[in-house]
Amino acid sequence: MEARKNFGVNSCWTSDGKIVILLPDKTRRKVEVMSDLQAIISQHSSTSKPQEESGQITSKEIAKPTTKSPRKLRRKI
Image (tube, rainbow, N blue to C red; front, top):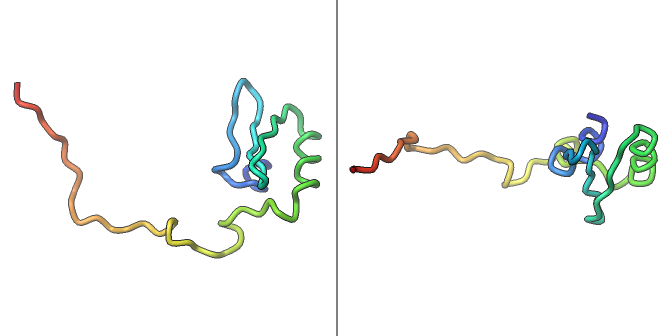
């Protein structure tokens, strides 16, 4: 959760039991222990603020309303 709070949901995931973080410079770091995560946070603290904490909403984040309801397409056999 700390990685997601500092780097954002889209920049953190798990792989083989390790946390993988996509850093602002587009490099990936694997984290196994909390002390590694804290070191990465301290190195990248000025650039690691996710967009949702900045209060700015981009056009990509705004959901467009749909007029059609989703329907399943049925194939005739």
